[in-house]
Length: 298
Image 1 (cartoon, rainbow, N blue to C red):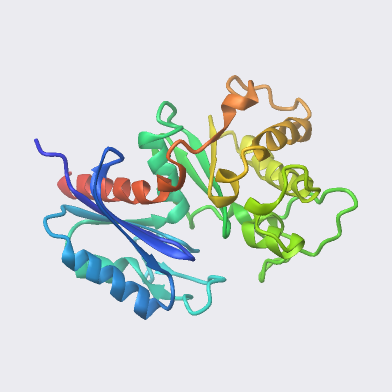
Image 2 (cartoon, one colour):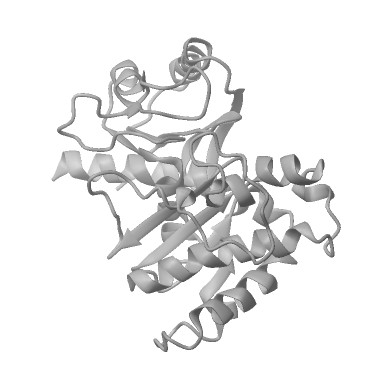
């Protein structure tokens, strides 16, 4: 039986990645499109889909927040977002109508979580979390192999962490100020230091606050009792391997020995880098398409 050919779209706040393939070892084409206005960006994606022929399903992993409730009138829409001009934009239904094939839709970070679960750093566990730290901060939770879709998708990038002692910087989230994203995302690091994360020296004092905030997020994840592994990716994590030891140490310090679950230690095997790197999102979109095709055949 032929392996299904899937069109995957990762719709990001800065760029969109469109890939055609069956998995990481079989990518037939890849197209990158700048994320500008909804009209320009979605029309450019539709032009790519028109050029590709013979794909069996479409997977869309979109920046958000997005509406993932199939019964909601705005299912497949980006809802209230910090990305100017994109609030209340129909993404999923529009692209699904255009492609005319079974379509899977979820948040970009849920897609990346599924990609890492299928082919990457969480392929051997059924329950895991994927944390992306880049333009924004997001968390995809997977339980028993399925993304945790409920009232909405997780928005743990906007939790309010316990602040580092002596740190009164107000943060830069337009909704919450000093939430996690407002303190530790790529734009927050640049706003605070005047430099991108990739330009900061490993011993720059700003990393102390970034690691502290991210460890607070992981503290929350551990206490949910769900992830058997936490995979961390995104531009900030990919370019700063020195950040992982800091986060791990601060996580254990924060937990204070309260959780002694098997698998939590050694912490170096619990908090790990994304194996798929920057391809986790696009490959996750392919996995969303695969799952949509299987649901249609059931």
